[in-house]
Length: 323
Length: 295
Image (cartoon, rainbow over all chains, first blue to last red; front, top):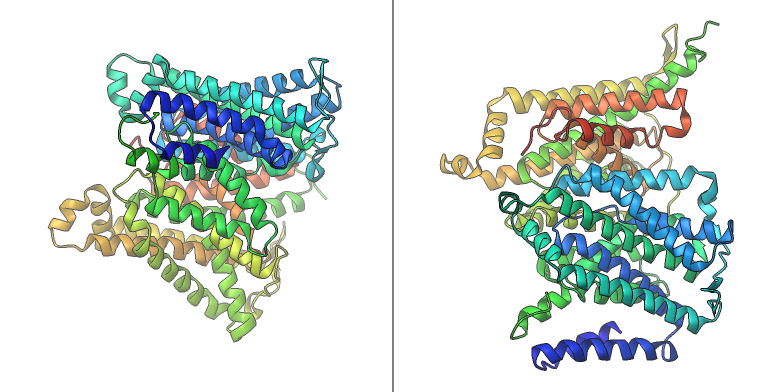
C-alpha cells in the first residue's frame, strides 16, 4: 500500500477530501494486495509499519528518541510465542498478553528513562533494552539462540483459522488499522496536542501547568504497548520468536524506517517500513552487505533528507499537511 | 588452600583482574566519549566500531605489512584519528546547528557501515593477534598469577587516562578546550580557531578508541563485532558516571569493570546485566549520574 499512498498524495486533491480519498484508496489497495503480492511479505510490512508508527508516536510527537524499542517488539514476540505454544492460549489472548507485558515493560523503562532528556534518554533506553536482550539470551523459556520455533497460529476467537494465509493477512491488516487508528486518535486529541507542546518547548509546557513527565510516561507506555502488539503479531505470522527481534540493531532499524519515511508524519513510518522491508528482501538475494546499505541510507537521510519522504512531500504540497 | 567467602582466591583474583582489564577498556572508551560529547554535544555511536577498526588496523599492519605491535600501537590510533577527522570535517560538522539527536543517528549509520564492511570482508570469526615477545609470560604474585600483557594493558590505559585528564584539567591547551566547551563564540572571539579545535577533539577521542582496539587485539580476538556489544555497556557506564566529568568517566569505568568481575565470581548469570541494573538504580537515586551535573 505504501508506494500507492505516496502516488495518491502527489495528485493534490483538495485537502479534506484528499485525506479521505487517500485512506479509502489505501485501504482498498491493502484489501486487494494479497492477491497481487506474497501475503507473508505484506504481513511483514504491516507488522513493521505498526512498529514504526508506535515508535513515531514517541519521536515524532513527543520528541523522545527511544533506542530500545526492540525490547518491546521482540520481548512481546516471545510472550505471544510462549503462551500460544506452551500454554495453548488462543491467539487473541496471546496478542493481549504480548500487549500487556510490553505495556508493563514500557512502564518500567519509562519510569527510569524519562528522568533524563534528549541524548541521555536514547542511551538509557538502549542500555535497558540490551538488558532485555541478555535476559532473552539466558532465560530458559526463550530457548537461547534457537528461539521459540513452530508457534501454532491457532484459531482466532474460535472462528477464524489463522493457518489460512488470507485469514491471517486480514487479521494482521485489522490489527494494523486498529493500531493506526488509535495513534491517529491520540495525535489529534488534546493529549496529543500537549505532547507536541512538550516536543516544541518542554519548559514552557511545564510553566503552563502540565505535568510533562506524566504525559511522556503515558505516551511511552502507549508506544511500547503498540510495539508489543506488532511484535506479538509478527510472532504469529512467522510462527517464530527469536533473538533478532530484541537486538539493538532492530531498535536502529525502526529508527531508520521512521526517519526515512518522515518523523512526525502519520504516514511516514508506514512508507519507511514498506521501503526498508522491500529493500532488505531485495538485498537478501544480492551479494551486497545489508548493514552497509542500511548504514548509507541512514547517513544520507541524516545529512540531506531529515524530513523523510512523506515530510518532504508535505512540505512541497500547498495547504495544510496531515500533522 | 584457604578460601574467601567460599571462593578459591585464584578464581576471585583471576576474575577481578579480568574485571580490571574490562574496566580499563570501559575507562578508555568512555573517556573518549566524554571528551567528544563535551566539545561536540554528539554521542558518538561509532565509537565501538572505531575501536574495532583500531584493532583491525593493527591486524592488517601485521598481516600485510609486517608492522608489529609497537608500530601498530602508534600507527593504528593515528589512522583511526585521521578517519575521525575526515568524518568530522565532511559530515558531523553539518549537524551542529540541528537537534543533537541527529549526530547520534549519523554516527549510528557510520557504525553500521564500518561493521558491515569489515564483516563482509573478513567474516564474523575472530582473527588471532599474537602478544608481542617483550610482554609474553607472567609473574607469580603469590596470591595470583599475573600475565605480563594484562598488567601492561591496565598500566597503559591508566597512564593514558590520567594523562588525558591532566592535559584537559591542568594545561593551557586544556583550559582553551574547557573554555570552548562552555562558550565557543567567546573563545572564537579571543582569536582561537574553535572549528579546528572541535575537529581535533573528535580525532583525539576516536584515536583513544583506536588505541583501546590495539590494546584489546591480543586479549580478545580481532573480530568485526568486537565493538558493538562493548559500546552499549560503555554507554551505560557513561550514564552512570555522568558525561560532565573526565575523572568521573575514568573512575566509573574501572569501578564497573571490577564490579562486573566480582559478579562473575558470585553470581555469574547476572554478570551481563549488572551494569545495566546499576544504571537503573543510579538514575533513580541521582539522575545526573554519580559525577555529573544537570545540563
